[in-house]
Length: 190
Image (tube, rainbow, N blue to C red; front, side, top):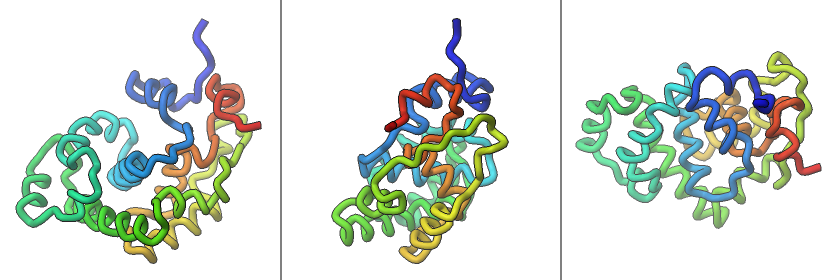
């Protein structure tokens, strides 16, 4: 018998694997926090499965999300990225990724780790929600609005409240698996 899963995970195998293995798992590793922030920004206006399909290309083309390297991308590298069909070829999004790498490094320098900065918005604790249906899950919250404002003040781009909430879900700052999903109890801290 198949375990019950969040409905959005059942649309395709990539989404299902991501749901089962990664979505909602608390992330405290700066490298993965950075990767997910860039990917959530790239996703703006698109479906998440589009990004999942292109994730291997993003890894390769963006130096495995090495912020030090991305922060130094020049016009030639920007042009190469814009010509590569393996990623979303959007000037604003690619520029934002480079700018976000610089802002990420500045934030790391100030806080010691990006994790210290980003997890402060939930006071270092996963928010345990208990949604019965997808229609109950918000697209943004007061916390994601505060995070968005703070990130923008630090120079980040493509970090609106909705993107920040999707980011919070992805990196496990909130447990938004539906209560009947097999992952919900696995990721519940209570």
